Structure formats: structure tokens, C-alpha cells
Image (tube, rainbow, N blue to C red):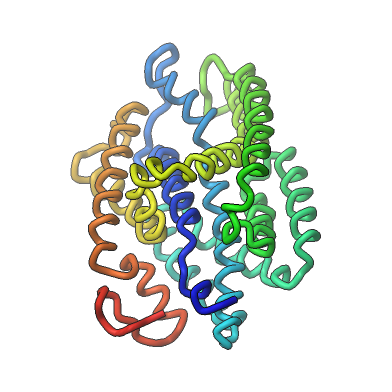
Length: 341
């Protein structure tokens, strides 16, 4: 790995992270503001179906996979710089876990603590054969997906990210255009089949208690978890293909900045939601459509802020703290200051 490779960001990963965040907020805002189930036959009910068909379990999957990719790249680049990549990554996980312990006090469904623990679990796979990681990760994901064990699917998703890193897929992404197109086409066909099947199990009334409505809802949600990685793969493949077009990269450039500050934006999503919820008395008073509008407004603010921030600074605020605690040294954050990592 040459010096240029050590210091070059892989922009496709930033676009994908930003894209994942846009979907994550749509789901997270529901429990954070205690959005009530809508009345059947309303626009809110239609959006609820859309949310659980096309969003829930689709975007966190991409985010989790990308953590695995970043895991492999981080250790590899640290080792290439003649540092102990394992020790530094353990520090990185510890800091992430501490961030998560604070975040979970405000957002019980947050992912940072889970990512830190699962990152520790997959650490031994860093030096495993890449084909073994690919096959084992895929098999484990299929089995856990069939049982709709969402939280346990984090490990195989990360492991597949590690395998992608081992194959250097994202560094050589320009060489795989045809394969990506074929893969995306296959995922599209499977996604359509899966979504049609899931749609056939949409409950007439969404329930969260006991009884037939609750059982139908549970079945519908479980199917969503099972097919989630397939739909996610289609989304990611389609975005990667679109990014080959210069006009798309230009139009979506704020998404790149959004994803480059993924940790800052993930945490600040919670801050925005909770603060606005208290200030505007939205808790338990928001409809599903209103949650969509609020989520879009927050995303626009974050996209704008991220774009402006990175004109003057090298890292997002939380990323900056994360890096310094990982490396145990001060790092200039402003562009134009002394060189840093």
C-alpha cells in the first residue's frame, strides 16, 4: 500500500454512509418521539407501510456493512504505517463504546455500543482467508435472516464488510462496473419478489399488543428483516452505479460530506429530534407524515452544515475527538494548519 493509498479517502464509502443516514433517521424518529400508530386507511397508514417495506431494516444494514469495511481499512492502513493496528483498533472500539454509553441514555435503540462489541467479536477474522469470511458471513446472514434475528445479523454484516475490504472492492470499484451491474440486477429481481411477498402479509391494522393484529404485524415485520439485506444490496449497488455519472456525483456531493461526518451526524440526529421534540411539544403528538417532514428538515440542516463545515475543517467534531483518543495525540482540525493524519 503506497503513501497515496494510505491517505486517500474512498469517496464511494462516504456517499454510501450518507445515504444510509438518510434512511436511519426516518426509522429512529418514530420511537424517540413516541409516534402513535396511525388510523387505518389514512395517509399516515400508507406511509407506515412504505416505511416498513422500503426503509426499516434496509439502511442500517448498509451502515453496518460499511463499519466492517472501515474496520479492515483502518487496521490495514495503521499496519502499513508501521503502527500496531490491533491495539489502535481496540482503542478505537473502546472510545466508540464510551460514546455509545452516553448516547444510549438518550436513544435506547442506538447502535454504537453494539458496533463496538461486535467489532471486538470479528477482530479475529481480520487475518482469516477472504473467501472464508465471504462464505461464512453470507451463510450466517442467511440463517439469522431466516430467523429474523436482527440484532445478531450485525456480526455477519460486518464480516461481509471485512471480506469486501480484503478483496479491495472499493479501492478497485472502477474495475467492477459490469459485475456490479449484474449483481444489482439480480438483487433487484430478488428484492421485487421479496417485497411482493412481504406486501401480501401487510396487516389490515398494525398492532403492538396481543391478538390477531399483533401476530400479523409481527409476521410482516419479520419478513422485512429477512429480506432486508437483499433490498439493501440493491440500494447500494444502484447508488454505486449512479455514482459513475459525473452529474450524479456533483448533485449528490452534499451526501459525501454528510457521510464523511457520519458519527457526528448520527449522534446529532438524536440531539435534533429530542431537542425539537421538547421545544415544540412533539412527543406523543406527532403523526407519521409529520415525522417524515421533520426528518427531512433535520437532514437538510445536517447536509448543509456538513458541507460548510468540511470546507474549513478536516473532520467532523465527533470524528476529531474519536481520532485523537484513538491515536493519543493532538491533531489539528482546521484546514491549512500543520499536517496531520
